[in-house]
Length: 461
Ligand code: PXG
Image (cartoon, rainbow, N blue to C red; front, side, top):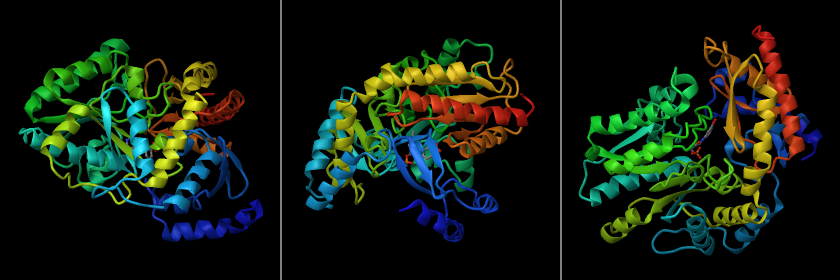
């Protein structure tokens, strides 16, 4: 589509969109007041283009997913080739397709040891729904039907279906739909900046881990199905746990026989500079939901990794697991994921995030923002990061009401040709893993301009 065609159609698309399209996580009235959606028409590498021809640096890789960047021909060709050969066939009732099998094998190779079984879906939410269905079944088969409660964390995001939203720890989601369902409880999240008080991050990490143990003891360990956590909490505001947190949570889960689930939907496939957030934090999960970077967002795909012990119980005692999606193991999505992983490996992209553009991004962020009067904390690892915008740096005091300043900064970013997302007043970022040093420098120029404009408006500059 030419820029001119897109320009000519912008008003029409906005109008139709406002009239007919119910958007996810969007206040439609606000959208209409703002004059409608920004229509994204094209993208290449880390650059988006909107229908009016503006070039925007995508600091979010779509929604934390386009890890290889936009427009990789190899991925399109893998999809085309697979579509021509076998557009679709299912994986129900004793059938499989070559790409669903080859991908299962590859996933067992790249994920942490012991995770040798895969259940496919199309989204992270579906992977987490599968998790809940599968573990309820597992504990029934084990003769422990009382073990049904899932422990998750406040501010967690695990998806939007009924079960995944129940696992999520977001109050707005719960309030709107009378959630969580019974059997889902939430403990403190390891966010030192907000909750740490006078404790050192290391001390606070142990305290946050203890809230998991307290909850297990309160419920009774024999009532708990699993604990689930994102290695780094993404949508909650890029909350990095203190280094003491995960080893202690893992120890507690093992001690009480509680299964440990690492939700790798954002952290997986190189985001932190390791293949998985679990590798970065030394977690050995029993189950691992993954999506987003698995296919770099080129096609919908998720996978729930399951360890040998759990799979063996299902196989030996379970008979037919009455669960599945029409598109579980879709051959075209699997072909794209295989090509995505091939490129990650051949181009040593994860290594590069670990050694090169990841550290460069983190260094440039700190140089640019650590002394900024509006920025209370710069946090991140690899190519995931956040800037916490605060009223008072010394006392770690947030603006009142929370979220307004973040929203303003996000709008400035957009106007300055940069996508950063605001979670409350944390500006979060997760650019494509292929971002170059020059693009990182450009990122900093646009981000600083936007944070400066925000600071001026709130009297901090
Ligand atoms: N787990 C985690 C850790 C996620 O971040 C999901 C599960 C659900 O995945 P699906 O594919 O069902 O969306 C997610 C999704 C945001 C944002 O604004 C984050 C997500 C999705 C949409 C928006 O930060 N994460």
